[in-house]
Amino acid sequence: MRIIIKNRVIILAYNQKMNCNVRIIIKIRTNISAHNQAMLLFHQYMLVGGMPMLVVAFIESKKDFTEPDKEKRDILKLYREDIMKIDMRYRSKVLAIYDQIPGFLSQHEKRVVFKKLQDGSYADQYEETFFWLSDSMISNECFLCNDPNVGLSLNETRSYVKCYMGDTGLLVSHAFDENELLEDEVYKQILAGKLQINEGMLYENAIAQMLVANGHKLYFYTHYNENKHRNDMEIDFIISNNSRLKYKMFPIEVKSGKQYKTTSLNNFREKYKERIGESYIIHPRNLIVKDGIICIPPYMTMNI
Image (cartoon, rainbow, N blue to C red):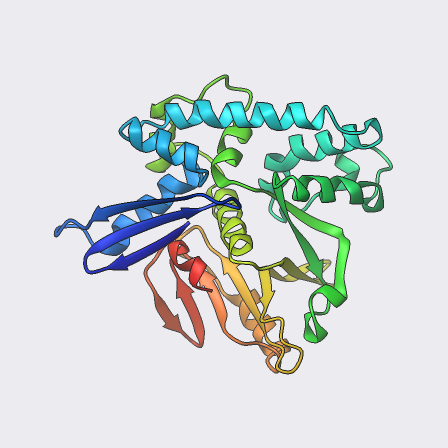
């Protein structure tokens, strides 16, 4: 999804990995800031998703979340039916990853923990699994890059992976799959922040989806401090300009709250300063540049 603010008009352009576009034009009210309206639209997008049929169902039902939720559950059902048709050698592993996507994303590190899938399991056993899920456009994978100084794909570690849903709206319905149907009121409570849900999970998944739609491969970075016995640097996403002559990488931190720390990003920028282009924080607040970091609202992600 791309949100363009021009001449007091908000233009939403939904562009999925298919030959289909939906454009919705909304006039800005004079008593509400453009940023607040764009954020409201982003939150609606985060809950509904970007698939054209979901957006159409949401608009035609006069923004009732129940109708797109029905559509989403039908899509999730089709995903499961497709999984059950694949080779038996991979079926159980694909199903295990697919079912656990919301659970892993709700954790602090958000990465797949293979021992939680099955005792004694390890990453190499699931290589075909991630390929199938990604190739089917069900999920987007984000791999650890342990030395981004000399390139991302050259130093990716596939045993450490974060697995995002390919559509942010599907993640919401998948996370509540024990409920037969999410009522419109429940969605509105999530939208208003009155229902406890891991908003950081939804934010990060939506940003991953937008970066992939913009043609980026996803990588993340962590640094383990032996003395502190914990990670002391964590960068949600790293993308690059793919240039062989003037290689630059762009670290991105996703913050769902308005109050946050930038310690990891500052340390990362200092360590890899020769290779870094722009540094980004994606947050709910308006556009601001502070201490050399470009802080943008999530609806501007497609401009990265």
